[in-house]
Every structure is written in structure tokens, then in C-alpha cells.
Image (spheres, rainbow, N blue to C red):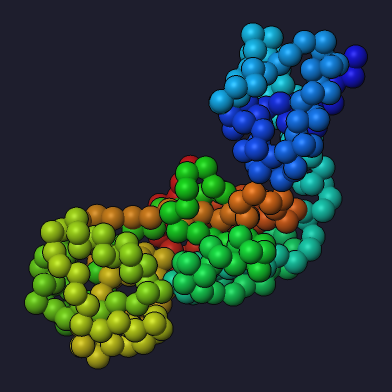
Length: 300
């Protein structure tokens, strides 16, 4: 009797996905290849493992085999990761995408950390808005990305980033320990799509306020310059703190809202071998308070 890992992976995928077609999409294989792998496993074991209904489910024997199959596949992944740790993932070039706030407020420190700790890995960065970053990652333009609030279980969490009110230092509320969003209703509100506009709209909804920006500008530096000029106020995330000049203040905001920063590779395709090393190294660096410009809360 010879049972192999491709057979077990196909069997697990069909059970978990509830069908051969969904399993094929998950594994990046043809449906016929998945069917052949499962059928060959059943021949090796001389018994059916699946009830081919809608949805597909395991037979009694299949249920008994499932936990052992999971252990075997998990062990194989661990072996692959150990091998990658020792070889390929410690070298190469990774294309990393991020939003402007993350690129300017967090990435420079991470680049320095990676250069010192992983000298064999070259990281090249480029920035776009949240939609562009996600699209680049899935289309293969980027090998990795720092995403804001991706689906749970995606990638390696780096930190929790909180939203703050950005005010001129001579603003009447500048010396307060925190700012209620409602107290800024009389100020012109400025917004940039590169400063998480969708989430800032949600903060207004939570406060029961109308979201009606007086000015909408694309460039983050322009947004900050307009606050400096006294044209209005805005909301930025904590990761932007290093960009705030001395004549402005970044204050805790109520209602309190935060987002998760996650470094990940593409969904549904193998990651560049160096990406997980970069992500885990970055998470550890931030958890130790490695970035002087970003005081977000590490995710553990």
C-alpha cells in the first residue's frame, strides 16, 4: 500500500471545500486531477472515502482517516518551511506594495531592519491606494503587500493602528487628552483617499455625524500642508505620526477606531519564499518597539 501527500491533500481539500470543483480551485488544479488523486487514494485503501453528493462529505472510514491526513499534510508543510528557512527564502528580491501612509510612516524603518537582519533579501517598494495595492498583489505585480484590515487569517499581523485627529497646535482643542469627533463639527474637514477615506467615513457614522469633506486631495503631503495652513482638520492613523510637523498635533480620537496592518503574500498562489521571513521578522521587530516613529499596538 502506497499513500502519498498529493492524494491526502486532494482528499482534505474536497472534504473542506464540500466538492471537487471548489477543491480544484483551492489547490490550483483541474477538477479531473483532483478526482484522479482521490480515486487513487480510495484504490490504495480499498474503500470509498467520500459520499459523492451535494455537498460531498466523508464516509465513516473517511472521517477516521481525516485527522491523520491533516497531521501528515501539516508535517509536510513544516518540513517545506524548515527547508525554505535554510535556503531559498533567505535570498532574492521581493516587490512590496503599501498605501502612502504605511509607506511613509512604517516601511522605511522596516527596510532598515530587513537590510540589517536579512542582507540576502532585497525589498523594492511601491505605493498606491488600498484598492491598487490589493489588485497588484493578486495580479502578481507585487510579491507582498501590507494590507489594512484584510480577511481574518490572511498573512502575518504586524500591529493595530489607531485613528487620530490632526489639528494645528493653536487649535482650541490641541491641549486636550483626546478629541471628540463631534467637537470638530465647526471645522472644515479635509480628506485624502490615501488616508483611509472609507474608514474615516465609518468613524463619522459611529459618531452619528454627516461625512461632508470641504476639500478632498489625493496627496497626503498636501493634506498635511492644508491643516498647517489652517484650512481645516483631518483624521490620520497613528502610523502617520512621523509625518506630522511640529506645528501640528495628532490626538486620540473618540469614537475610538482602529485597523489591523497585515503583511501578506497573494491569496491562492504560492508566496515568494522570502515573504514569510520578512513578515515574521517585521512583526517581531514591531512587537519589541523597534520603530521609533510608530507607537501602534503589536498584535500577538
